[in-house]
Length: 175
Image (cartoon, rainbow, N blue to C red; front, side, top):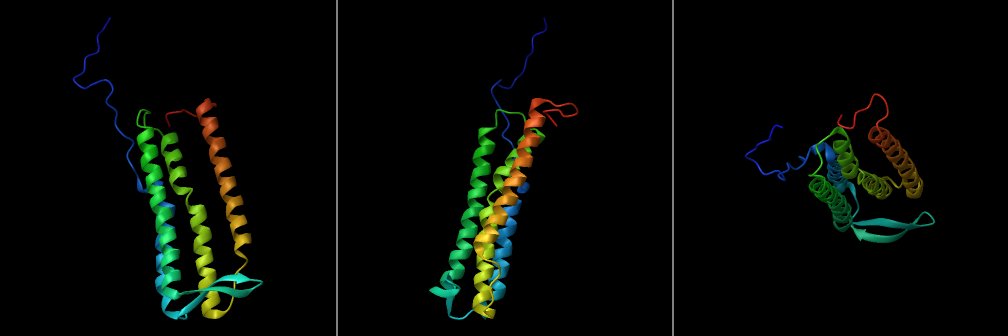
């Protein structure tokens, strides 16, 4: 028998490194929202219609308050994404880093992009209504499209992950 000797403790594990790809989409939507707000803010009237009933304005805010709320929501969701990925990376530190772990962290961090897309669309729709008196498609239609697309992407990811973990031919769990 050969004894294994090491100077490092046996329980020392290396945490999974955080990568920008884990929060790339939320950061991109946040940046796009900031650019959109900065570009259209000067064209907004002093009072912005943000809520509608039967196609007519029903609620008003100052343009500064509306823009602040829209960007604050995007920032909060981006930070939530970072926190979720950080906590998940700490939770899986006992596992060896693998392609599956990296993909799982990327999905966990980037899934926040779904509500961010809906908020960004709503912000754009409100900006366009207040500047040009046009509305894009109803927000609920856009939200439904985003949710269906997101659900489809998640289903594909989980099917691939299950196949990879179950050891189907040609796939290695450590890839």
